Image (cartoon, rainbow, N blue to C red; front, side, top):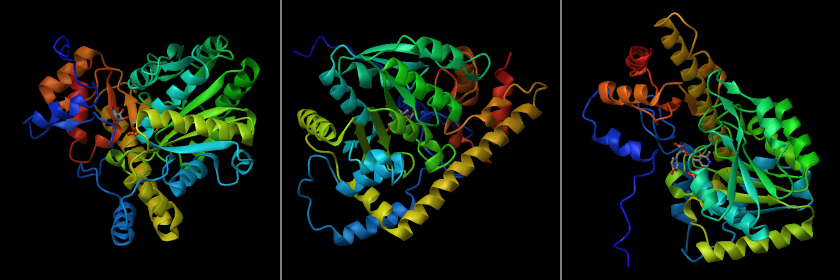
Length: 397
Ligand code: PLP
Ligand code: TYF
């Protein structure tokens, strides 16, 4: 039955890790998979997480099933972080939140819910968008269309083209937006651009579908949620996928959530019941360990403030690395062609190199990044900065 299935290529992003691991060059640089790294190149367990895990080990008395929606306190944490504690949509009970296996689980569950509600729905995704959005959304049978987002030549958002294209989006459509730290470009909407998107959504009747995988990595927890909160203020419906993979460093624990804002509390309950029914058909209930950590960290004042300072440390380190990388690159060639890296936010930016240049960086210098020249800025450190800047400048035209 299975013998006709051909061999497939690995995930183009995760596949880079194996190539990097197998490289014996001591100078190798990993700018591939988007995980935070320290100056020493590690992706450590946050201290607040280690502390919460120690407490859980002492207090957890059962591994019995969680409720289908997962850990209530983790869902509350995710919703309050996203919308703000006192947001009207929360106090009006218009938001239904379920815990999911990571942000990916949230995206897939959302896609299934949307396909269930409206099999003719189209999701508009940015050009470019995170490569995984395509399988996560199309696996549910949804149709994708693209709206222009990043102008590669000018290293900025082409907002006019985006808005022009989204005039075509109507009531059967959802528009997928990255809340902050756009993956892969690092270019985020300004507050006034979010306001224009909110107005267009009201006028056209499309539903925003927001992917927030990097809350706290851009400008701060509240600033990064500006778009989510604004759209939830002004529109009757909103779909939101969140993740604790990055901001709590919980990657492999698969801690995420799906929140759906509905027009009223009764409808929110109905949507929640539908979401849980779909989850039952996929995996029944999400894993609990990561979510228990989220609950404990968020609801324990000392752990929460420790988390905030660790998160601030990660964000500020990446912002500093952006400045340093630009400085080193500009010092090695007479153009200011890399200035945009310091204007962008979060883990990623495009260097703006061709596939041939990216291949040279890998083969000649053991510098790893995805073929579109996306770099994980957190992979830069004081030990590899000069080597990296030398290598990049050597492959320029
Ligand atoms: N969305 C985007 C844009 C991402 O980059 C990621 C990965 O980090 C996710 C969603 C979901 O990640 P996870 O499933 O690890 O929580
Ligand atoms: O884009 C990235 O590098 C991160 C991590 O299948 C990631 O979002 C990459 C691939 C994948 C899941 C997560």
